[in-house]
Amino acid sequence: MQQQSAQLRWEQHTQRPLFGLALAFAVAYAVPIVRPDASGDVVEVCTAVEWVVWGAFALDYVVRLALAEQRRVFIRTHWLDLGAVLLPMLQPLRLLRLVSTLLLVGQRARMASQIRLTTYVGGAVVGLLMFGSLAVLSVERDSPDGNIRTLGDAVWWSFTTMTTVGYGDHSPTTGLGRMLAVGLMLSGIALLGVVTANIAAWFISRFEKDDVEERRQTEAIRQLTEEVRQLRGEVAALKGTSVE
Image 1 (tube, rainbow, N blue to C red):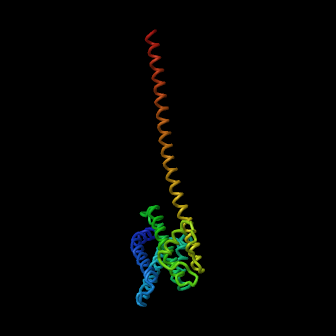
Image 2: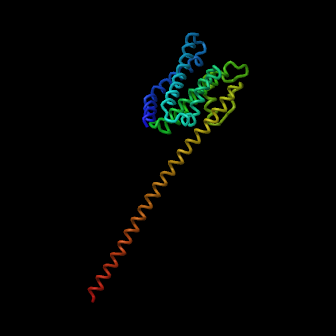
Image 3: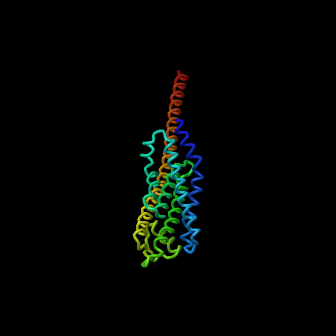
């Protein structure tokens, strides 16, 4: 119990700092893409910030694993965290650091009880739109046959892809770009399913509350009717006694 409490305390204390680092990662990832003419020093600083943020999330996973009472159970139930930590080690691509950081942020967000579902979904939509746009722009801008050349084109493409509208005026031509498109489409469908399920659950909850209230009122009326029937019987008995 003490180890579990220590793990919970660690997660609570590191929640906000890790989200702050995630914002720093967002800025570091966006600067070299939005400003392709940035100096080499700026790019190196942004790359260093990305690795530092990923290292912080990796350290967070290691500490949580060390504080867990049953480490095998922790690894089995947090396999996505482990995969996100190991992903950038496979190949030093910025896209892998982006994917792993998004996964780790998403896992920690789901563990935070103070973050409501609507906030999480809204943040996920904004994050996927932003990072999807930046990622596809970084891989498509220099493609000879590419048609996503500006940030505006990338944002428009991400929005139409996430909503599965797909106008076709902009589309990725590279392998990485198409992989990003698949990820955005699946994420958009998943988020739409979460929103739909949440709305349906709200309506069902409201109907259940109304049903419970209706049953309560029906039971109260039944009890009142029974009391009136008993009172009538007593009054009739009293009248019969008076006549005698």
